[in-house]
Length: 251
Ligand SMILES: O=C1O[C@H](COP(=O)(O)O)[C@@H](O)[C@H](O)[C@H]1O
Image (cartoon, rainbow, N blue to C red; front, side, top):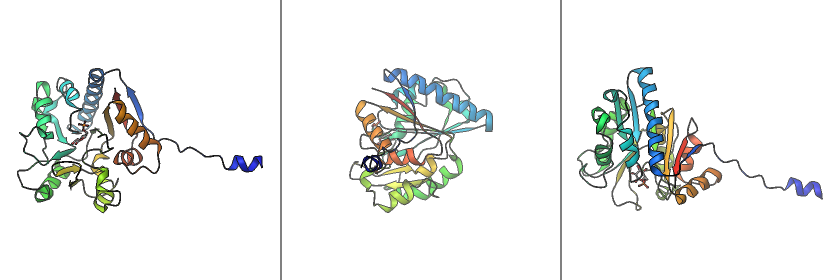
C-alpha cells in the first residue's frame, strides 16, 4: 500500500530556465540593463565590426532607452530595429519607431542606424515582402534582443488571443526555427494591425533579455515558466530560446 502511494506522488514539472536580475526600482534596472546591453554590443563590434539589436516598444523601455543612449560605444556601426511595430505613422503617439527616435536616437546613440518596420502603406500585409527582405538582409542575425511582455503574456506582437490553434501564430510566429523572420498580425486585443519579428528571428540573438516591470507581470511570467500546458507566447520564448534568457525585473 505504502509503495503504491509513493508511486502516485505528483512530480512538479521543473520551471523553464531563466537567469534573473531583480532590482528595487525601474531606474536601477534601466541603468544596469543599459550597461549590460552596451557591453554585449561592444563585444559584437569587436567580433565582427558591426552590431544589430532588436528592441521592444510599449511603455516599459523609455528609461532603459534613455540610459542606453548615453553609453559609450561605436554607435555608427550599430543597427537598431523594433521587435514589432503598430501600423501607424512614426509621428503617432503609439508608434514604436517614435519611441525609439525620442528615447534612444539621441546623445551618443544619435548616429546609430534605424531599420524601421513601418512603411506608409494602408496595411502591413502590403509592405510585408519588402520589410521582410530588408530585415533578413540587413538586420539578421541579431546580436542582442530585449523583449517586453504584456499582462496577457504577449511578446513582440505575438499575442495569445490569436489563438493557440491559429496556424499563423503557431507555425510562423512561435516556430523557433522557421523561415519567416517577420509576420503581420491582426488581433482584437489591439486597436491597430501590426508587424512583428517571429521567434525564429528573435532566436538568432545570442543574448536575449526580458525587461519586465510590476508584480502582476512577474506572476504571469512565473506561471508560464512553471506550467507545461501554458499556451502563452512568453512560454514559447522560454522553451524555445537557444540560450536561457535573462530577466531584468523591478516592481
Ligand atoms: O504592444 C506592445 O506590448 C509589449 C509590452 O508593452 P508594455 O507597454 O506593457 O511595456 C511590448 O513589449 C511590445 O513591443 C509592444 O508593441
